[in-house]
Amino acid sequence: MLRSLYSGISGLRAHQTMLDTTGNNIANVNTAGFKSSSVQFQDTLSQMTQGATTPGANAGGRNPAQVGLGVQVAGIATNFGQGSSQSTGRASDMMISGDGFFITRSGNATTLTRAGAFDFDANGRLTSPDGGIVQGRMAVNGALPTGGALGDIVLPRDLVSPGTGTTAVALAGNLPSEAKVGDAPIVQDKEIFAPDGTSRTMSLTFTRTAGGWSVTGNDGAGATMPATNLTLAADGTLTGTLPDLNGIAIDISNVTGYAGLKTVSIATADGNAAGTLESYTLGSDGTLTGTFSNGAQQAIAQIVLGTVANAAGLQKTGSSGYTTTANSGAIEFAAPGDPGVGSISGGMLEMSNVDLSQEFTNLIVAQRGFQANARIITTSDEVLQELANLKR
Image 1 (cartoon, rainbow, N blue to C red):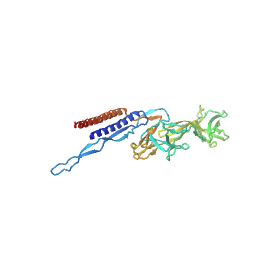
Image 2 (cartoon, rainbow, N blue to C red):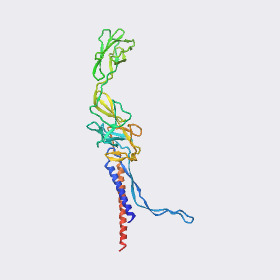
Image 3 (cartoon, rainbow, N blue to C red):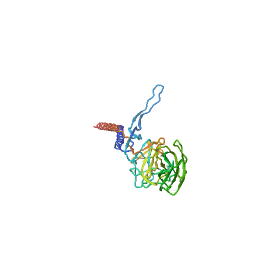
Image 4 (cartoon, rainbow, N blue to C red):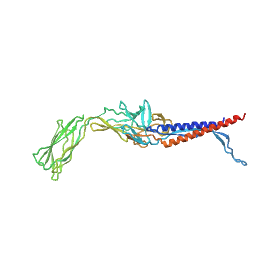
């Protein structure tokens, strides 16, 4: 049979693969995190009809003569270029700006993905649409570990921020210098907290004296502060310090004694009651920070990204996932923001990087290539028909 007949068949197969690949790219034009593919062709073995000869004294050398036997698919390469971003407004949607991959677990299988359309299941685990559990590191008492094995990212709805006791308060404002001895004292109250988060009220009383002000106080739990004198200078400066009240330091360095203003107050106090989780935010370093009903903010977990030495060597597993192969290298874990990994943006998704104009052009090229190879088969068939007619 004619060699051109089989060359045409190989061309049909190769261009059919190109059509299949291009069609898959177009079908996934709106798939979040999808990376387009392209077909690479190469020729097959060539049949030697005449070998090369060495030049002689009386005759020149001859070049080899070879007849090609068709085309074959050398490979299908994946384009891991960055896709455009799309804002979704969903806090659990995430996008990687860089070369890293999200890591998910399904049973004992580890999968890499660029699709960040995640959500929380009934157990509070962050999962992908196909049920893969996003991997990272959970914080311990608000502190994130710097290394160690990965685990499931879990955001329990009943998470509680523990209460903390008040250890310091700070006063600010002005005590009026025109106040007279015997005037009604100035009383300032402030909510403070015990180490277990129990709320109580601290009270400080300012009484005018001949040389300045006398301060007494109680912490609302029975502890009292003995009267302490503050000296008022002619320029309105108050000097003196207040002792601790049942372990609570009291800062009065920002209190003044000018005329005409009575604005003294307990401006700040640390500590808080226990609180329940109300919302969370995602930082560019992959940290999930919870906001609690007591106003506290605490790190809950950190999403970890994965990279491989050769991303083109990854194998697609479906559901926008990839797995490692012998030519991709092992997964290396890194925190978002580390060099070569990229950062994470919350409330956004990475769209497909398919270029429709290029794909439609590839459709035309593949179609014309298919038609040209079909013409080879038709022409070869006509030649064979002519050979068969020689016997007539």
